[in-house]
Structures are given as structure tokens and as C-alpha cells.
Image (cartoon, rainbow, N blue to C red; front, side, top):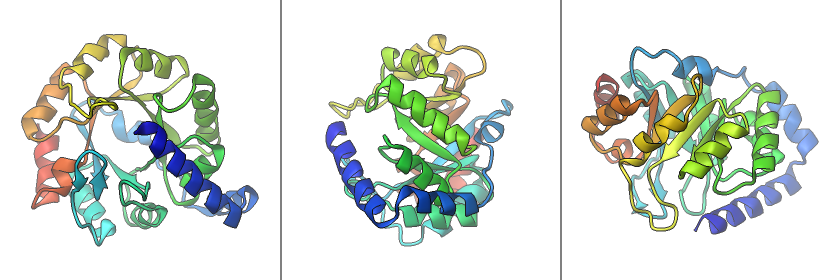
Length: 257
């Protein structure tokens, strides 16, 4: 599944690069609004930080929500106290777009994450041109050398990366390549099953100073409280928010947890 997602994202990025070459894209990136600091947004430790996701569908669950106005949803997230917004830009299996990212980034005052299957420098610059402050790097899909280079490119554009891991080995790799923000995803990429204990098991592997993000397996405020008690600085929440009736209030509940 992951290989297929990367192949699709690569094909789509190659098509876009054929239309807008890198040097033109870099001009757009230099004209984008200034980067908002993800490290600052997630660093205060007096409460849990919620990264609220705009997500229409997923390979494991299919259609989740009919999001006609991602800007309005993002503004509800921000009003509820979200520290960051994650925007899916993968179109084939998640129904997202760079247009969503650009529109959301222009409408909120908190950092915005581009969540996609990124493996090229072009995709990183593309994220900045669309207004992203943070990019997602998935250790299961790229080599250490590629992760190091993409981190370098992101930082050259003053962005940060959320580096995602699914295993102890991947957590160690993420830290070794110099990630400042590391997410532990509870969803097994092969079976799509959730391991609610995985994040807590990985916490001892984190050195001081690295921001710890728990991803997946959040349905209720009690799940956020569990992650917080295990040492999470932030949680990334998608399905529980897009399928709920009142996203602003749901974010408030999660933050209060």
C-alpha cells in the first residue's frame, strides 16, 4: 500500500514539475507568506497540543467526510484551540489537493502541515509555495540519506518536518537523521490495525528536546489524556474531527483533556 501511494505521488509530482519547473516553483516559494514556527507552536508544555487534520477519505476507511469548504473547517479548528493544521494533499486515495493547502494556509494564523508522500526536493519546495510551514516525512517510505536531504531542504526554506515512525527502528532512524519533531503512528502500515500502546513504548527512545507527537488511535478525549500521560507533547487527530458534528467543540475537548 505504501509503495503504491509513493508511486502515485511521484507520478503526480512529475506531471506538475513538467508544467511548472523547479526554478519557477522556487520563485513562487520565495513569494509565499513568511513561515510560522512549528517549534514555537508545539513547544509550550502547559497543555497538550492538537494538530487537527483536514481529511476527506483514507485507504483503510474509505469516504470519511464531504468537506466542501476546507477553509471553514480549518477556521473552526483554530477557533477551538488547535496548535497546527494538517492538510492532506494526496488526491488519489485521500481526496486532497495543493489547492486545499494554499487556501487553508492563507486563512489561518497557526502553522500548516503538508501531509503527503514526499520524497523529492520539488515536493518540499512545492509545499512552501503553497504556504506550508511543515512537511511530513515518513521513515517507512524513504532512506536515511533521503530523509537527511529533505530535512535540509525544508530548513533551507525555514520550514520544519514532522518525521513519522511506526516502529522502534524508525524512531531511532528519525532521531539519527536529526528530526526535531517525531511522530509515532499507531496504525500498522501492512494490516491497518491500531496499537494504542505503541507510542508509550517508544517514549524512552526520545532524547530531551525532541517534540513527541502521537498519531492515530484517537476517538475520545480519554485517548488524548492517555497519550498525554505517556509523554506526548502533541496529538494528530483526523477521523475523530472530520466525522464529528462540531469540530470546534471537539478540538476544545481534546485540548482540555
